[in-house]
Image (cartoon, rainbow, N blue to C red; front, side):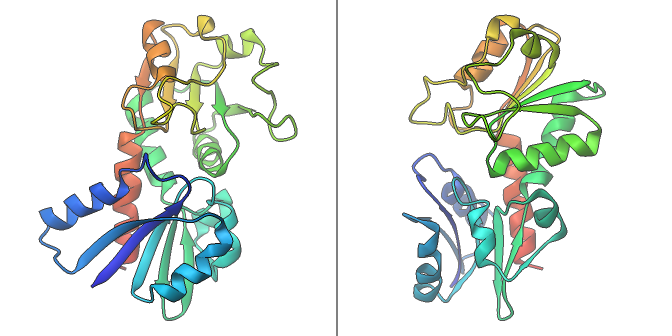
Length: 244
């Protein structure tokens, strides 16, 4: 049996196992299985690998996208440039870290923006997913600023974010887990009154499909997109990597 999985914490919101199981059934792959491995800390990874020698690859989610880099033997170009890993391939030569979030982000931004090119973006969150977002924005030449709970990691905190920055940042991306099921009634604390029909709001969260963040944007007339397209694209990219 070929085994794959997802590491992170918590994993109750994740659709990865269901997505890959459906893919295996659809494509008649009866020798493949995908499971969730909720690790209490990243230092539990070596133990998991020892217990599951048949694990050929795994995805990585919050909060281990950066911490897992200490445990891989090599990095792909994108993973090295982004500084975060969300996909690991395991071979006899060791572990190789990849970043497939970037593939999903490119497709999602194409879908959301079309031919539009906002001059300024606001990225909510400064974790591993945010680093991939920053990389995707830099590829497009879109200037961005960061909002973080930690004043040392962002341009602003949620408590000192100026209203005019929200008004002028026509692309706002939630790269934080805020609003993820089961805390679906939460949203990043930004002044939504300054969101307009000229804005684009993109939420990397896909569960629920319409987050509070996106719903606030919808109510203000903004164009919105959730993380479903990104999720599927990064999963397909992971599968290609595991089968190279």
